[in-house]
Image (tube, rainbow, N blue to C red; front, side, top):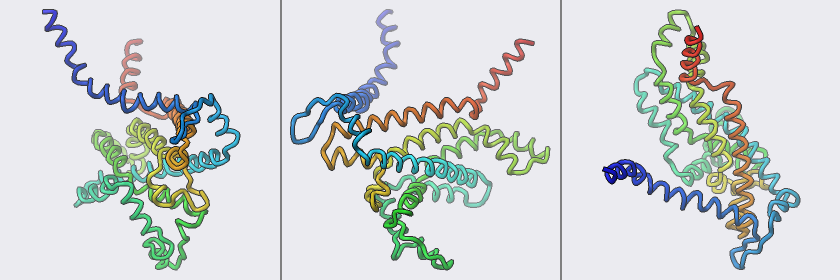
Length: 306
């Protein structure tokens, strides 16, 4: 009996063991190793030398590019995150409308999400080309002379943001799934009370999907700081390092300049910044995120007091 009970209790752990091993080997292990490496001068061609907090001191006091790249990434996140979420929510609202061919629209909107970063950068390289790009051609039809998107420092960051917003398909589907789960009774009752579609959106849809907005907000902030592939292939960090994102700066320190210890310190600073931003978002969520279960529990407590 004891043996059967042990097998029954241990069976779930056997199933999750591969995941635990993968998590320890490919996530926790490299994380701890990189933390250790950040305290060393760790070139590829010679033995590592212990520096203590030397990498961190150099980064904050001597390396001006650190502050420039961090500022660029913060600017990018400040524009990209709200823009990305607004586009995704707008498209999600569109594909929930009962119109003919809506399945085709869903597919079209989602296709960019499955295209690789390399292909996206090539496509947008053609679209944004200052000499023969499609975007400048369309602007010329309106009598507007388009800028040289990828070679003008004033426009390059905006060009990267524009290209990044191309892949909102996954976020759109998450919004769409949540919106479809809203009870239709709420909309019918509000229609009987004379609520307009705009009022239904702001008073019913938006409050109910706030948990999904919170999830998408956090994942967008994290992905904005991890942007490397697109900017590397689209602008290479230029022109004049106007798009030299923090992720690209860290990557180049590791694999171009072969400063693995310094790059590890860069990565840990980015990790702490993301951790602080995520904590602030979670802290603020109690004021603007609506959870249905909390509302029900609140009603039960009030009922109990009576």
